[in-house]
Image 1: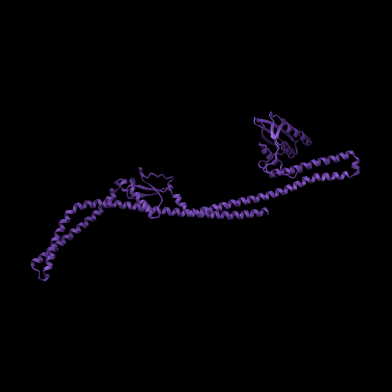
Image 2: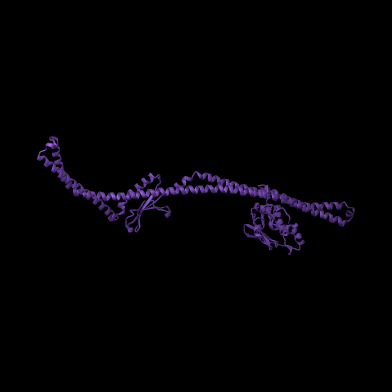
Length: 499
């Protein structure tokens, strides 16, 4: 599959998944906002009802007080007025039952006159009582307006009454959440509050002014909070949480799949590059050996000892080169096995490094360079596989020469020291082309090669430093690299000493 096709599929799937995720999140936000609005409206309606009931209680209190005083004042007057009427009503009933109105005597007509006068007096009394009750109501209203705020708020809105009213109104409106409340005076602060009243922010508080006609200095506010409000609000969208979780899971699987696809594509490209490099590296020595073999078939070459020696030397050198390349390819198998076969033995690091330097010295001098050995470690005994340890040092020296600068002769410095009593530190320093920072982070990855153009002498498989890193890790040590572009590189190996 082409890289462009993978990118197109990635973009399309990413847009689809992100769109689905965005729609779910927006829907959840809308649900939460709607639930929150309904909650706020319900609480405000309940608080308004509580305030109204407290004002009604206030009115009832003053009405009961004034009516009680009025009953005591006019109880005697009412009894005298209505007693006179009762006696005359009895006389009227007796008279009407015994005689016809047409035959009434003068005495009876006098009685009717008295009755009429009594009825009028009674109407006057009732009218007076009505006017008094009316004035009484006005007096109660004036008293409420002028003197109600003089009562302590604890009496006008005691905690038990407020709690009862709040609970009943909230339940009537469909809210059964636990709540906490407080009465706050505008001037003096908290009048009283429930034990759990401790709002985290002002946004969590629902407020309503009690008795709004009170003077500003005596105004009080009812504040209510709901500790479990968040749980109540988000309970309406709980059913969306699994859907959201599955969407995130799907997004994660998609990202992982795309990552694997790109890695596979990269590995495919690396494999093709590896095969091309390997073909080139093998083709050159094979061609040289083939030409040398053809020359041996020439009689003139066989008769010339010098030519024969030269041709045999070419065959020997190219055979060694081919064998070295084959060994590098075989090193690849180490990366596909969890436990490489290691033959760990007690070795002298200084002696092994010195042996490699002596072998490698001719190659450095071929380019007019020089290699310096400062093997100063007093305790050089380590436990390693000798062959692999030798290959590690050889690979580092080979890279130093391979990535040399054209304008200066290669200068290599190999150093060993004991940074402490438990370790030995091996440093390989060169003055080559160096590496950029982005390359320095990846040089120990398998198949990774620093780009150096199309120079033939830097062709390779990208296995050398990856092999070095794996071997040092198996030896129980560590390796780090420092480099500056066009100035050189330093590789530092730290290994535990053998005790």
